[in-house]
Length: 300
Image (tube, rainbow, N blue to C red; front, top):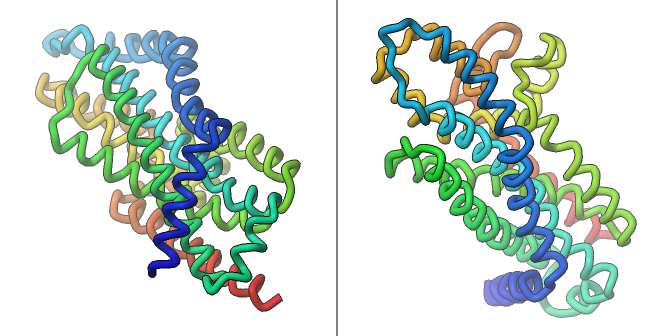
């Protein structure tokens, strides 16, 4: 374990010393927050304000509830994307070591390839978690400025769900990055993940807006369930406030369906327990695949 801990600490230090990778990791959540709040925030507010006008006259919701709902959506979307894209960025150190030749030096040391691969995995988890926790602080500050309806339990749920997504993002990035061997491949994968992941995980646009066949197809992707889990945690305070103000249950359910807090497959609602099982099970499966690939490479 001493060898693993030493390599893990080395990888973490190397990541935070590399200003390029560190800046890219930190700026991704910040850019997403600015883009969401600046360009999409007003669109979301106008859309939800129209929906809230349909509430019965006796329902008196706080004036900033719509703003808080939008802020919660931005928080969940940004974290759902950042936990994966930042993990890919942090895990690029594994590829950079191959390109620079450092990986070859490590392989001739007493440290086995399996332990070396494990050190990259653990260090990516730590580095990604640090960046994502910074993102959580930024997002919570933004939510505070729009309207705060969270309890301490809600904040803990957001942190724990984010950590689960970090584990998933790290496992996914490890399986992909283990095959990369050049800067061109690194750039290509980074571009594809940054541009495409937000769409297929439902962060940029809720999958409730898609057709039935596309929704069913996307529900097979674990990232959808990760986004839904973060949606429920970040919007729980707003939904509690609506229920406390006697908003119709049908209205609250319709809002949850619209925002992917409730995800449906072939018309049946996917339970929260199933979503956690899918996300955790996929993470474990990806880790096993990563170990198998590493051992296969070691034999060759």
